[in-house]
Length: 222
Image (tube, rainbow, N blue to C red; front, side):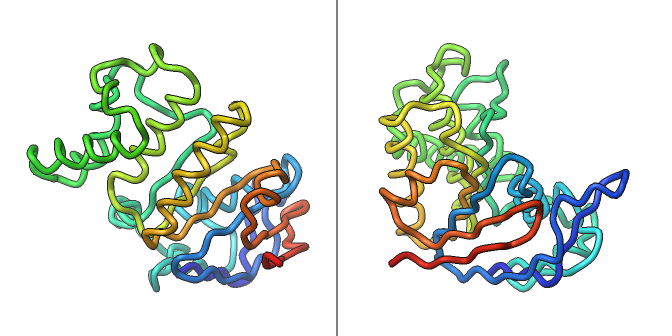
C-alpha cells in the first residue's frame, strides 16, 4: 500500500527533515509514527499526500509513484487519502455541513449523494445535530471530530493524522482514537503521528520511531 525507498527531504540551508527512509506499510495496517518535535513526522506525512516532494528517493502509494506526480494528478491522489491536522484546518466561515461536504463537492459528487454521505459521516462522529453550526461555536473536541468526519467522508484508502490529540484532554482523545480504530476496522490504512506514548500503551499497534529524520525503530505490538 505505502512503500518508501531511500527517501530524503532537505530544505534550504541543508536542513534535513527526513534522511534515507525506507519502509513499507501494508493495506489495512494501523501504524503510529513517533519521535520528538522536529523528528520528521509531519514532513513524512506531507510527502505522502504530496504537499511536499522528496529531495531524492521513491514514494509509492497504491502502486502510484508520488515522487514523480504531476500537479494535475495530485487531486486524484488525494481522493484516496484523508488527512486530519492538529489545528483542524476547518473553514471558519462555513457550517459544519459545508466543511464536511467540501471534499465530496470537489470530486463532483451529486447533491443527494453529498447530503447522504455527510449526514452519515457526522452521525458516526456523533455530531449530526450540529449541521448548521460554525466551527467556532464548537468545542475543540467537536472540531476535531468534524475534521475526522471530513477526512472519512470520502472513504479513503489511507488516513493520515498529525498529532490529532495534541490539544485534547484524555477522555476526548480516547473518543478520537475509537473513530480511528473503527475506520481501520473497515479496511482503511491509518498512520497516526504522535508524541503521546500512552496511546500505544492503551491501543497497541506497530510503532515507527523517527529521530532527526532517521528511522531508528520499527516495533510490532507484543
